[in-house]
Amino acid sequence: MWEHAQAEAVKFLQAASGYEDAGRLEAHFLSVLAAFGFDRYACATFDADADGAHATILAGAGLDDWHEHWLRSNYDEVDPVARLARARRRQFSWAEARDWSRQQGEVQARQSQLWGEAAEAGMGEGLVSCAYGPGGELLLLRMTTAARTIRPADRPMLDAVAVVFSTLRLRLHEREADQPQGTLTLREQQCLRWASQGLVDQEIADQLAISPKTVAFHMENAKRKLGARNRLSAYRRALEMGYLAT
Image 1: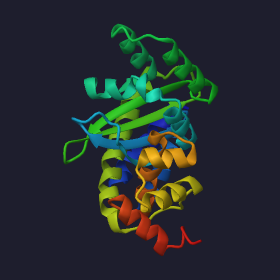
Image 2: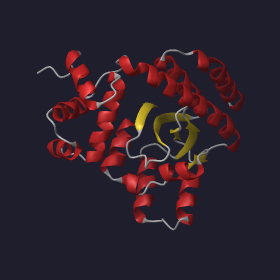
Image 3: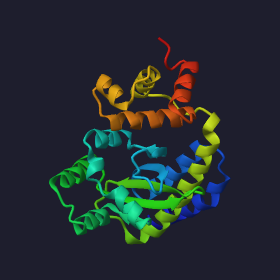
Image 4: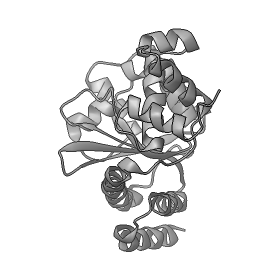
């Protein structure tokens, strides 16, 4: 099993730079994660000097519902993962993030609730890899597994695969600016429709009974899928493609 996972990772590293299609790159990456026992991931980028509140989602699988719950529960206020990524800017596990948080004196009931709910959702442990984009962007890739522990021997190869994937996915994302991708969800369509009427995130949140952070999450997903650089461009493309037809 271990040899198979390592072999799959090597194949990915050899083939990844040749992928010009994001779908093929993502599918191969996900198959490598599966070989190591990981079944979900999210790859995002944000300004290395910013607080990460407006991260651009590049790719992911299996974490959309969890991320929306995470935002709705305001777990960004207690989750140490993003802050540790900016502090260390190298690979670490969720267990190490919890230890780091305790060292900072941040232990609190809501953190325990966060990790407990993650485990109930099938995420027993996570691994986070960091990399830099050519423009100095901080790339953050979260991988999760139902297992409660991660084999130490697996971590170097997983980090190599994650860094290569993140870097290449950012490159493809930049190329995709004028190439619409994917299908909009109902929430993404609703957020675009309200935004086109001049509503800001808080006002859209009030209309949909969700949090402003969840609105921002849906808007970023819609922009990514539509290959749009801003919200107005995303609305126009969604309208042209028939997503917002009344």
